Image (tube, rainbow, N blue to C red; front, side, top):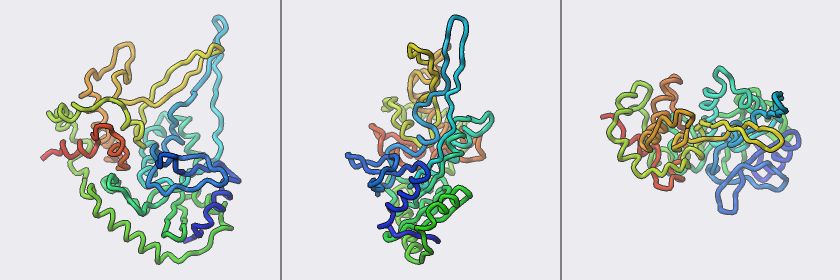
Length: 339
């Protein structure tokens, strides 16, 4: 496996950013991490994960879809789409790397979302294996290996070196662009570090959480459960869980009059909001219980029912750490399990 010494990682970033746009996770003033476009001197964050996921690169929070100009009865439709530049997202954790395959099932299914596809075609995902998983992590519940993540190329940190291997053609192209900085490395220490991480994963509080009781054939048992009332009672409907979730894909489309024309844009929406999908007929889910139920039924029942058993969650733990009233998918799963 190819490697580069960690004290030379700045050279790696400089080499990548010389030919295409590079994004890396960096520390904010509050200690949290977020993705930023790389500039010389930036330091890679050691945080386990970013506050918001890497989903933003393929499905941004707001996006201009089309413009209109009107003169009298004449309407000019202006296609604002541009071919995306090639870019690299570096340091994506295993949970977020899996989230892309879930989003692909939504946006690349017919009819294909050309905006999303354009970004996916031009983006290279370089993932980073986890070495210090947090107590809120439960990616293993959904069959994700935090030590061997998905991605176009994958990096492993043994404390001294960064090992890199390609998983596909994109990954190989990435490695070729920095080949002059890489050398063959001894992976014996890396294997030891992997085993240490696996031992940590076994001891995490949610290590034994399973999806055995959930899936596409559990609709009636869970939809009609009498537990939704208690579970949703304290929910604020703030939507925080949906906005930090790497797999939520709901959006709204609106028109905005700039005074010089109309811009049609889409922006993230949340099924937890009272005006979600509110059209002329009103919102079909009138109570917070119904909206709360929709979110978790989609993750645990509806999505696997339509996607060969794959669940709509990747166990990143963001909803555990960010919900202001500490309600999350883990509590829902434990409360709803059919005995």
